[in-house]
Length: 250
Ligand code: SLL
Image 1 (cartoon, rainbow, N blue to C red):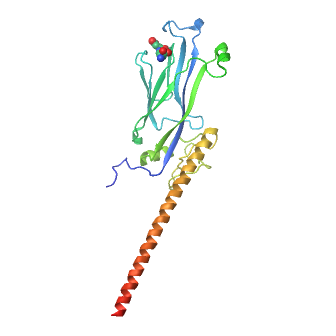
Image 2 (cartoon, rainbow, N blue to C red; image 1 turned 90 degrees about the vertical axis):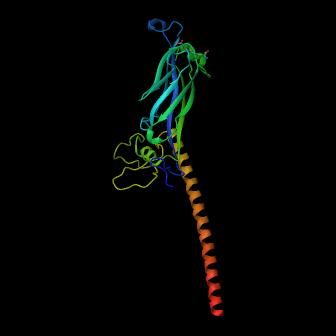
Image 3 (tube, rainbow, N blue to C red; image 1 turned 135 degrees about the vertical axis):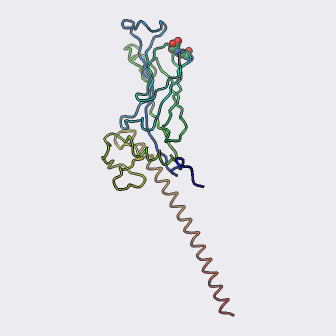
């Protein structure tokens, strides 16, 4: 039975989209402390999900992002429907933030959840120095959202929108490998990440490895089918010749 419209998946394909998530926090300066903030609050912070500089748009596949703050905050579930996907607050304590990425309806994908530990206090080797200088505390991670066997409409969207830097309408991602057929007048589809920048090169390499693996699997399947076909042809030829000899013998 054919799959209902919008649910047919592109087999053997995984598409990766990079992003950065994290937080930045700074001590509230008593001299410029806004009057309306809680007396216990020591820091102002922002928690965010941002695009990678080389892949600057998230909004063509992310519909909204929710940030679940500690329950000591009023309206602790904060939902951001458009970029910049971030929440700024003041507070006194560190806690785990649940970040939920919701995809556009075409994706037909469930939301994905990540966790971030909101850092207010300097940590690591240079903690002491940072504390003295009152430097902002940044805690950041690189992540990728992986779409395994995306539905066809979403595959089209992913590979034709929001490409890497410099890939505007009509421009060609010359060095990038493309997947899927390119029809006349159609923009080149790009499943890979941009080729400039540390992350993207690594990710492009991974993507190419996966493609290479998929090609090998398909080649193996073709070989196997060919072998079966030859076997059947041989059996058929044997049957025919047996038949012929029976006829001749009569
Ligand atoms: C801790 N487990 O004990 C953590 C909880 C809660 C942080 C941290 C603001 C609260 C408010 C705030 O900073 N909550 O506005 O009342 O460190």
